[in-house]
Length: 566
Image 1 (cartoon, rainbow, N blue to C red):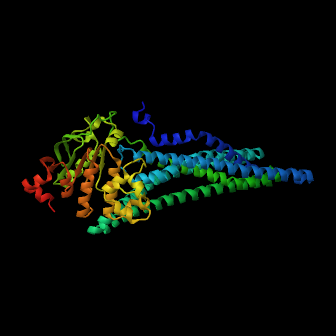
Image 2 (cartoon, helix red, strand yellow; image 1 turned 120 degrees about the horizontal axis):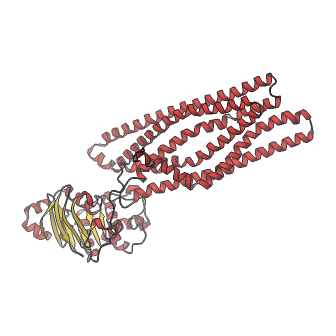
Image 3 (cartoon, rainbow, N blue to C red; image 1 turned 180 degrees about the vertical axis):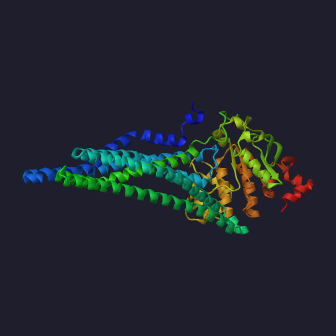
């Protein structure tokens, strides 16, 4: 009896079947054209044999002209069928690779993350190299079939001259494929391991690029580089192993094909010497023996490409079939933009309980930075609701019952290290191009000096990760993006840590003014932002220990004064 595990199809095989199924039309045309190409290639030595056998024997100008015309037709057929056949297959291949790249990118960009143990660099490798190698199956199958057609046509033609020649080709082809199938399995396993190690090296590079400045700051860059050198060396060694296996495979295939071609040539020569085949049939056999090496080489390489495509498909399946971290609910928040955290326990949070009314500006002073980070993760749904105790309510509805689109529409958490993308200041502030409050957001975040500094204004080019901006400029740009989103509930996590005290004071006043009437929560230790808030909640050891205005807390709470005074 088959177990459920064996009944369930392998995800990588499903991906390959999907690719083949939706390109069936292109593959059919490609197979026909490439089969015609291979048949024309095979017909050329056959035609030469017939010309030697008949046209030259008769020495007739008409027969010679007919022979030349036949060769011209064969050459034209070979040229056009190859050109259009490869055009059809390569277009389908490129289109299919693009589809899988989009699918992998879509999974990576979904609001709900997938439960897969891969870093961004590994996902990038899967979306590029693995997608391309998986789509290669679109070309592999037609080329495999067309090569088989060429081998069969050559075997039949040789068999008509002498049965022994036809059987030699068939038996030799089977022996070659049987030998190479063993090597192709090793290539598949080695390639899969190589792709995994290259992906890990890519992930390490991405991590180093992100953290290069902090690493330089505390002198950890040398240790980080040594770590990268280690994974890079492992990837290099595995690439060398794959190259060796591929070299052995290619060398073995070439040697076996040459042996078969030599065997056919020698056998045909012996048969001609014995008078069992004619001179024309000998010319045909020698020509086919030389020609057959190409389709045999192509035919023998196909198992290798199939194994590589399958290994890449298995890696893509790691992303495409991974379950979501959480399953969002279907509900929408009710009227009102209040935020309630009820007995939440996660990380350093200990049964945290607080409520922010609609339209209120509340600052949370966390004595332990880790607690602020844990709270921001919970509110941004980076931590799924089932992973912590307690309940978070947005507009009266539990976070677990809301769709992720509804959460993103009503609640925005802007991290202290918000990403800056390659583009312009405008596209970083308003990626969708639909915000009506970009000027107000620029002014409130004190980004006006950056805009005024450049002749292009908001259309000033920004490099990847904001490489041409200072730390304070990147932070203000991220804040402007959060303000321009104009959501019902806005949570800011340390939005002014990289700006000077004067700018911080202005930003605090501007944010309070711009967000008046809408719910705003700021996780900060900035005196300016704390003073601008309607009330301040003190978060200590994972719970709220005090609540009042900033100035009252300064006057009455020594611990608070020591924690936030600068």
